[in-house]
Amino acid sequence: MEFITSPGADIMTYGSSKRRKSTAIALKNPVDEGPTIHLEDGTFGPSRKMRKMYFAAFSALLMAVAMGIAVGYSAPATYDMTTRPLSPIQPTKDDITWIGSVLAIGAMSGGLLAGPIADKIGRKTTLILNIIPFTAGWFSICFAENVNAIIAGRLITGIACGVVSVAVPMYCVEISTPEVRGFLGSSFQGFMVIGNLLSVVIGSFITWEYLALVGAGIATLGLVCFFLMPESPRWILAQDDMEGGIIVMRDLQGDHVDVEDECTKLYNDLISQPKGLLTLKECMHPTVYKPALISIVLMFFQQFSGSNAVLFYSSSIFEASKDFLNPKKSTIILGAVQVVATLFSNVIVDKVGRKILLFLSGSLMSLSLTVLSTYYYVSVENARFEDNYNWIPLASLILFLCGFSLGYGSIPWLLTVEMVPLRARSTIGGLATFANGLFAFIITKTFSKLEDIAHTYGTFWTYAALSFVGCFFVILVVPETKGKELEDISSQFCKSKKNNPELSISVISK
Image 1 (cartoon, helix red, strand yellow):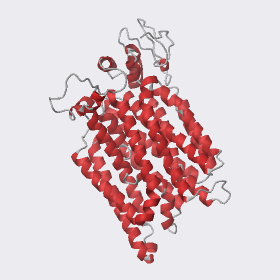
Image 2: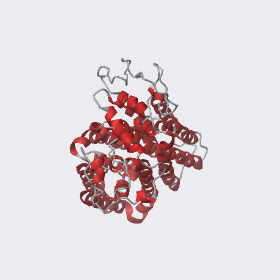
Image 3: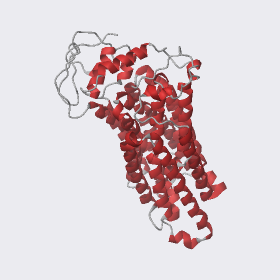
Image 4: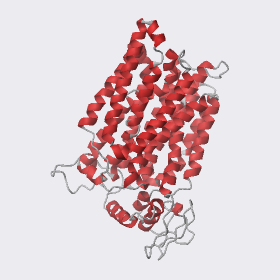
């Protein structure tokens, strides 16, 4: 494929325009000006103080912040709708469940579409075009005249969130070096909970209409910042642009990385792969279906721990302890705890390992929900106990969110990318997002009905039991991927020599 060769050529044009070959290609860094690099002699400029890789990842992760605002919107918004006398919309209890859960339905469809689209037009272009459903959904909510318009806006915004949840982790992993792959890959959840915290904090000071405008503004800010970043080197190489991939990868990862060797391995692997969607034969290969099943089951335990129900209905849950602390303040505290715990998990995930953190996460969630459900059970017959220990709901949910953020909040998304071979990554990533959205919808839509049937204590006991079962799944089934090349991870799922060696499945580490 031909590509542009003028000395002032901007690397951001790679993946979106034709290239022309030349004997020397100059590279201009839009983040900090430095000397040019020429492929002809292999010379490198001086080491940069900070890799552009982190700037690119941060820009993409701003869209995770926008997604976090959308996820956290329902709690402060519905609280404002139901408690503010002048609110133009007064939703019923059933309306609130739809406002909270319909986002997941949109995410299901967005997740399925994101993978094929990202492979066709690129990760960058997919995320840039995603601003359309993001802003359209928020404006539908902001100017809504009835509940149906809000629900429609949440559905459209959910589609954008589904695209973000697939394309952003994919982009971050594909631009990263192996040493920080876990950190950048798991940072998606960290930035999402930052958006969640922003939603509940800002939502405690402004009305739900203006909070929707804030959501649209953050999504637009993410677009503006990311527009300046290059396309994923992996996608550029997939377009038969070897030299373009080398230039972008070197610009992103710095001088000390042997990018030519990395790109050569990746390019040779890509050109040996069949084009188009996965075939049925490929889907039946153990390196594809085994990690796919593990990813889906992890998404099940992530959602059926009750995490989204806790976030969506946190204000209502704290009505029981409002004499101890205002429900709005309690929700803000939960959001802050989740941010700190998630960022801590992002930092230690490459040191401690994925499997240990998942086990600790499930154990803490099960313990905290057992304590919470016991509190509600005893309070039914003992009003004095409820008054004397009304701090337990807040303490229990703080422990719950610490446990959730430590492992299940981010690691399932990271493992989906790490375990799945390169060729199947987009397809399985979309499938995992669809499953996550489906499970999230079931949990958030049935939370209130489950409370009516089994009471609050029975609801949380159910979630506690499922979290406990998830611990055994992690111990017995989930592989440890810390410090391993992706081809080594994939080989764990394909130990039998009877598997067809002619079936080419990409497992190159980028």
